[in-house]
Length: 188
Image 1 (cartoon, rainbow, N blue to C red):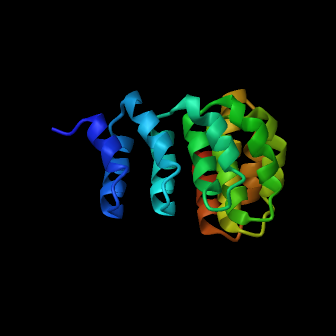
Image 2 (cartoon, rainbow, N blue to C red):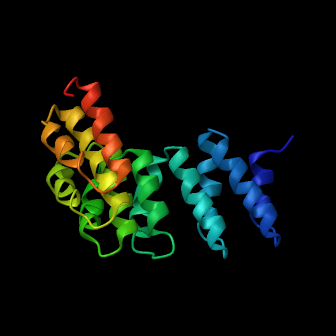
């Protein structure tokens, strides 16, 4: 039977496959003892291992790594995974650093931050998310609408107007989300 120490040792292997498997096992174990080895994996020379470690920290809801993940938002190789993990962890300390990403020139950063802020139910993101409903990319509009729904429900904010607007969106996915939510609300 493998132990956490076995996984920690596997993270030092020269073999990329062994390091990847160790990070995967640690990420899926649902045990807080996995957090420290995953933090160590953030310094792995391989980008894929670092991505998996960030995902694992998100899956584990490791709140102690929020400051590390906030710092990783600035790393163009790890920023999207860090933003997603911050959303999964659910610590409100991530809200302020994520808000500016809603206006980032990179669509993937806008999309990921919209999703994370929705998961965080960040009331202060509601108005900026509304502006993203006019984004040129359907995936960003979809994530913004999803976040607006989550935040609107959490704070009993009126969202119907935005849902009706998005029924005419060029993206079928956005249209479907708006339609489904309106049906749930009994507004169709």
